[in-house]
Each structure stands twice: as C-alpha cells, then as structure tokens.
Image 1 (cartoon, one colour):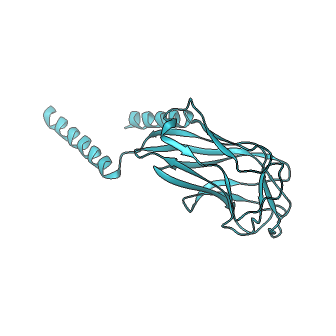
Image 2 (cartoon, helix red, strand yellow):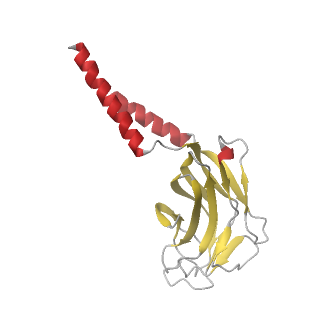
Image 3 (cartoon, rainbow, N blue to C red):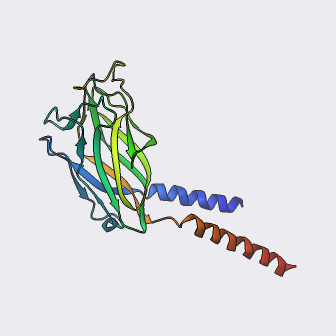
Length: 208
C-alpha cells in the first residue's frame, strides 16, 4: 500500500511538472482584443483552440494596454473561451500575465469557469504592475467560458469600486497545462477497481 501511495505521488508530481505553455494572448498596444496564438510544439495542441480576449460590459479606458472600466458590476470582466475536442481535457490549467489597476478599480479579481468561480483563482491588482498566476485546474471537453471579474465592490484602497475604476493587462497573457485524454468516467473506474479486487481475492485463494 505504501509503495502504491509513493508511486501515485510521483505520478501526480510529474503531471504538474509537465505542464507546458499552450497559448499566448498578444496585446498590440492599441486597446484591441488580444489575439490568441497557439504554441505549435505543445503536445496534442490540435485538440484545443482559444478565442481572442474580449470585454464583457466594460468600457475601454486607455489604448496603452488591454484594459477596461466599469468593474463595479460583478458580471463584467475579461472573457475568452477554451474549446477542447471530445475525449480530451486540459489538466493543470493555469493563466498568467502582468496587471495593474487604478485606485478606484477592484482590489480583487477571480476567474470563473463556465459560470462558477474557481476557488483560489484570484488576482489582486496593484497600482504598480505586478505578475500574477491563477490556477484553474481541469478544463473539460467542450466550449468553456473563462471570465475574470471583481470579487466584490471594494477597490484597491478599501473604498468603493467606481464605474471609471480600471484594470489593465500590461503584458501578454498566457495559458499553460497538459492536453491529455480525458479521465475514465466514474462507472468505468469503479469497474476497474472491482476487477482488481476480484483478482486479489482469486490470487489469495489460489495460494491456499
């Protein structure tokens, strides 16, 4: 049992270590939507695609970077879609980049996957640009929506987020992960475990 646990731990660590760059959103500096470009050398890259980054309910407040204001409405934010072909998933998914905000912009942002906030996938913008990374986890097959929005109506200084409070993505945004065959559905997993248990019982009987 101990050996099995060690083996599974090694596999888990290896899977995290293998996460590779999958795509980059490049911002041309004129405020237009960031275009997603795939990393040609990534394993199984042909099984996924990513949309350009867009604004949901936000106004563009500067052309110096990809930015937006009106973050005082929690449904507003930056959005993109990740389309994963049937039979595949993106494991160990993580997003990253560099960000800053105005003094009336939201103090905390969070990524949601298909309408559900991802626990721990938060970003805390600062006046000065800061690097950020958000761990999303597993993205399943299908068209998946990823939206980053304000956690609440509290701004960077502790006051209220205003309609002109802005968030700016200062550098390209990236997504990394492992594109792999989707996990075996639960019923099949239970069947495999049952067969393993049966084999152990038969082996013991044969020894007797």
